[in-house]
Length: 507
Image (cartoon, rainbow, N blue to C red; front, side, top):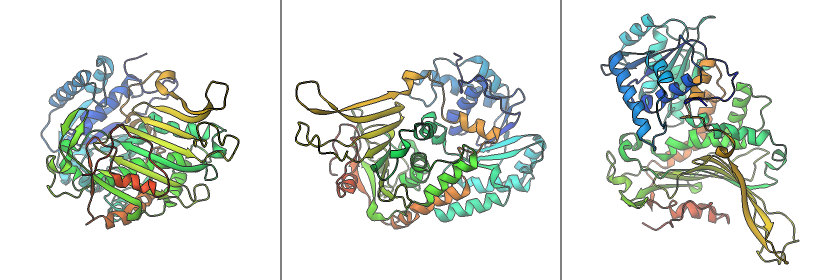
């Protein structure tokens, strides 16, 4: 098996020749994720010999200086097992392929001269990657459009990958869509969410639609409720400047969590054609009833202990206000108004400094409607739960009722399932490989359309407005979350699946 690979199918076509222009060449995203992704694509033989990278940054950089800096960063990943990309060694063949094709230029993202300079350097196919602060998304696209850099021909495509957050509320998302669509066609803009680059997220469609035994019960007649969890043990740490005006709701819900929601709840598309899939996702998000404050909890971590160490409160992190009301935890109860899911609550939670690191979807089925086992040891039948694990141990697990060995009918709940690592050789990936490759191939299936983005913001916009001056509740770092999140489910007679072993304490 090669040191760097993406696909295990030998007939995966090579991407067409193109130039990848990265705005924000000296930034963290470029170093930590984009370069490892290109390294893996090169190792899989998926980049054309004429592929090249042109970085644009407001700081003065030289080709050799940029190459050396990125080489040192890649080497550092071999010594950091906690990095999103980790390798025992960096294979000089794929990294040499990428390194030799790196070029850089200095430019101000708001200066017309930058884009005129670009226009003189670029021919043929081009993908523009906006690895910059969200405030530059509109100005960069306008600069590209005014310089004629988004004009396509039959022989050359021009595409733009736009990072998140795409807007900060419904109004700003609409305004940004209006700005970029004034410079090009919808099909040229690829709004990225790296969650969709994860193999285990993409596999949700296969689990649902490729197994005939699941589809008949994947609906309100059999499903009691659904949990979607994206929990982190890390804190905000050095990202306070970004996180203070953003918070957990904007950072995670309309993008990451809603993407998981669409995968688990959308109707079967007529095909895997990009627009057929994206149509169903948009229909699902549009069917979400706007979230109200009584169906939401916002929390903020206080001081506590994580992994045996004392950690500070969010308000004591760098660049965070001492009286900050920014939420680091969100729990929501969603209702989807369509025939499949009417009456089935979807509970979403995400937060930092929690008791466990976990991203998963848990489908709770209704109890079996039989009285046969009433009165036996073990009490009433436990409802079946199917857990679709995204991270950190991808796979699935299902809770089933079984008979314990012995002469009498005694029931126990067991967990059966699988881990991807037990069946498939792991391919090194940071989640961006498939997305960059798909953009170069012109496949927008895993990217968001303008209408999907706006429908997602519309679902949470009333909550954003209501929370402007609302207080937060607190939870100690290392806890499963605030007590109010437990109350959100308890009022309906439900409870979250356990998240770690630490009990929540009042603060």
